[in-house]
Image 1 (cartoon, helix red, strand yellow):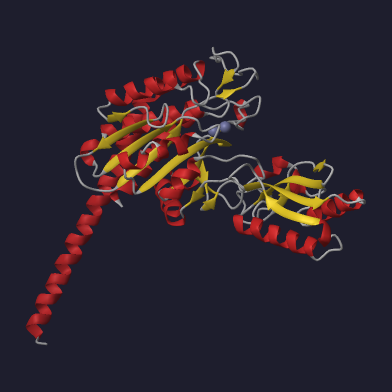
Image 2 (cartoon, helix red, strand yellow):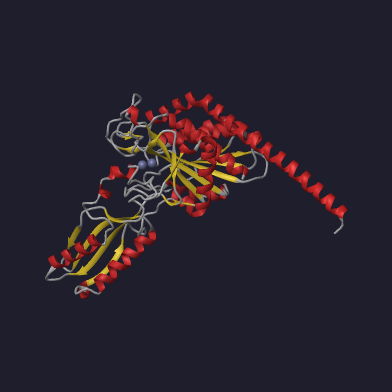
Length: 438
Ligand SMILES: [Zn+2]
Ligand SMILES: [Zn+2]
């Protein structure tokens, strides 16, 4: 190597460094600018989004009957200039925002159905459909979905790739996602990544999530014996065996479900007591017939591995007990063809990346990392989409304790601080932009 070439190389390296840094600086400026535009657009449409949310709330529709809601969403998306597919798996809608430039394909899913309930509606704009109420916040999910579509459509010229908006019916009966998939959703669209949110009692202004499962795995465990002359001992033996296999005994603070949101014990603490558990969630159901005895109970587990280990251990303990001869089967039996109830499973890489992009734009306090899950019977059929496309399921904070707004879905006093519409539209519009640019 000669000295001359050394100088040329050094010059090239310096030029590269200079232009490289300049390009990075430009990118940072663009990045900042586009997220400012997102926020001004959200502010500009916020009042109209609140009106739309209240309209959905006043006219709730149960699973499978979301005709009006679906028509409103379709006409809104058409007004934004999106390509719109209707009737996908019942009243499902797909809006396609194609920037005309090649790039990533990102899907956003919002569920739109309400619930049959006679609980009174606690807001100033209550449901006019007697016996039906948005008590799970899907009126907000639908509104935030169209808000994101509006904001991203307004930034279309600055984006590359395609954004799909999936408005899913029938989430509450866990049928809608499968209906949309069976109706060819993923022939219509081919997303690389998929995202969704659900309202939760975290403070408004925050989002929360974790990688892997965000809800428990649920099943009924059913132990079946041949009829025996000493059924009482069989029942007592099974009850004691199952109870002793629980992670926490009945006197534990684990069972005070307020603790799920407690900063010391709850799921936002890395050392949460809700990280690794098996919990029996119902009373024992004993069924005796002439030739059989069945002992059945609901079980929640923090992971599928934990649940499988639990089953294997229970089975082996009964098989090696003095009741082995009476045993017929030990099975997981959530419902027909579904031994264990599904739960959303978040892709680790996408979870970390999306949490990081939101906190870098909106501040550390906007993102709450979770380390466990409450033993609630919640789930979401968004899980079916995630089986086919990697994605993340977020919780969106809708509570405001100073205003007495609690935001726990499916509870009588469920209400939401509508400021969460602004948070949801801002954070997730920005997140999708960051994913497209990734
Ligand atoms: Zn619900
Ligand atoms: Zn819900």
